[in-house]
Amino acid sequence: MKDPNYHSGRGAQINTSNRFLKDSYGRDHAEGIDDWTDTPSATKYTEQEAKSIVNKVESPDLPMDYSMNPYAGCEHGCVYCYARNVHEYWGYSAGLDFEQQIIVKKNAPQLLRKFLSKPGWQCTPIMLSGNTDCYQPAEQRYALTRGILQVCHEFNQPVGIVTKNARIERDIDVLREMGKRNTVSVMFSVTSADESLRRVMEPRTTTQQKKMEVMARLSEACIRTGVLIGPVIPGLNDHEIPGILKTAKAHGASFAAYTFVRLNGAVKLLFHDWLYKVFPDRADKIWHSIEDGHSGNVSDSRWGTRMRGEGKVADLVAQQFKKYRVKFGLTGAEWKFNTSDFRRPGEQGKLF
Image (cartoon, rainbow, N blue to C red; front, side, top):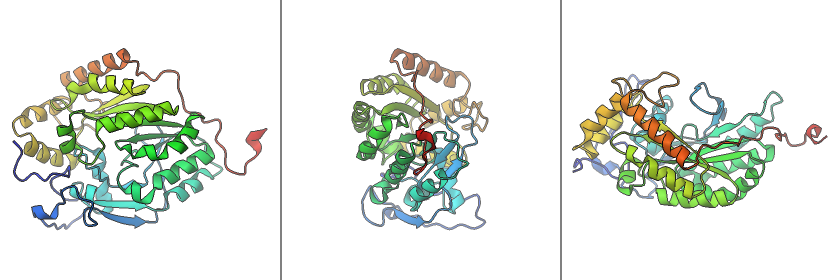
């Protein structure tokens, strides 16, 4: 039975303190948290003229060397999201602020155009949504992701997209053209086919059924699609690995990946608070299973193990994923991004 203090419609239930702020303040009353409404007070968008959009990725655990994010913070509200901690750099909490205070980089497409126009840029794939989802609800209002894709298409700049939102279907016209040149790859992040679990764990994401429907449409349009089970949480969704992979394959996916849950920084406090409010009857077992996957901790900062975990529980997850990825033909073999057709508008050299 859920804790009576549980607030539906949001992932995080509290605002944790910001490690970078000496002083902090807050207002605590249940009526201040909206229950999945579209009222103007539900989420605040702060528009910003950003200085840069493309960032160098230092992690060897990620498949691309660069990433870009048109938004900071994410209204999807996934309680486990590692990116929550980054919101503290903006002066906010990693908790409710992360999903209620969204920073909009209004000039993101223009910044990307400027970046790609630099003579020193050696074309390599860029990850879109390496931190927060580029198709979160703010995209409906600002269309920055569409603008970014249009720039990428113009330059033949390859880009990899990760999303939990079916809104990506809106851009199928641009994605289809990019797909013809192998300059785009789309990965749908799925954690559960259980709607009761999805609604509390990632309340404002798209249902798995809708994601799969959109995946099929993109695949039919010759756009490479895949599925990310991220994260796998022992005791919550680890048993769903075979089903998710089978469903994804049936809807056109050609590759798959997964991450093992890691609760870094303030996410540890947020997830613990959420877990014991939503699943009090099995919270201890789930928490200890996560610890088992990180040598007694709930997170790990070491390259190579932090996103896969280690130990008996993590090994079982890895074995199960590998088995069914092969069984359903989701290894993603014989495909790579096309970087040879990159061009800056106005350049003629590559035509001869």
